[in-house]
Amino acid sequence: MLKRARGARPYYFENPDIDRLMTIVMSVLEEVSVTRERLDTIERLLDAKGTISRADIDAYLPGELSDEEREAKRQQMLARVLRIVIEEPKILAEKAAGGSYDELVREVS
Image 1: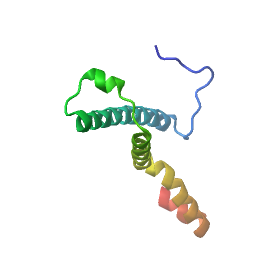
Image 2 (image 1 turned 135 degrees about the vertical axis):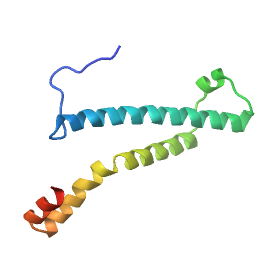
Image 3 (image 1 turned 30 degrees about the vertical axis):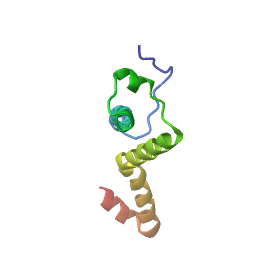
Image 4 (image 1 turned 180 degrees about the vertical axis):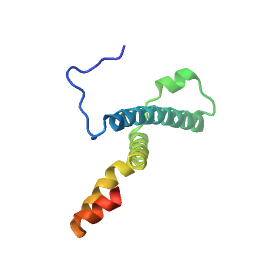
């Protein structure tokens, strides 16, 4: 059963629909990440054993190197998916510092 937080839902963007869309995107991203980790497990087990069972997959415990590789891949995927959310405010701030307010408004409008 899904649990819900108490109180008003926080919004991070001016438009609540953008927040809803980001929630959906992040949920799908989570599912893709889990699927990639499971696929990585299958590939590693096949390399090591040649054949595997579902029990082998469920019992697999990644080593430290595997964890580091998976985390690096996860961070790369997050950076790709969220690039526009992270980079656009930086670009706008840089342009605002170097240009006039009217120029910035024309560019983002």
